[in-house]
Length: 73
Picture 1 (cartoon, rainbow, N blue to C red):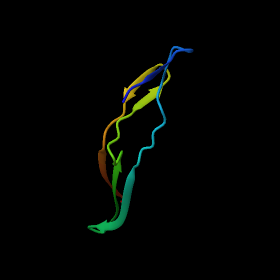
Picture 2: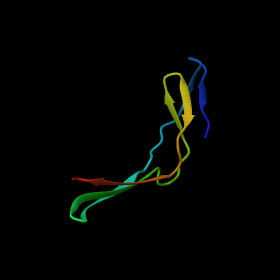
Picture 3: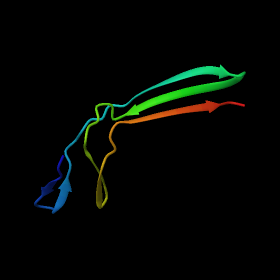
């Protein structure tokens, strides 16, 4: 995981990467309240890569699990 320098422009260059994310959603009812349960895994294969934006670069987060519930009342 390294940034390459573009010698002509003096700028950092990060090569293209593909990141895989997966998620699921389940509609149900809890105590009579309509509920949506969600689970997502970001960066499934735990790839290490750089995020470039404007004048700065940061290392992207690793594999991340996010679980949520939405209630409609």
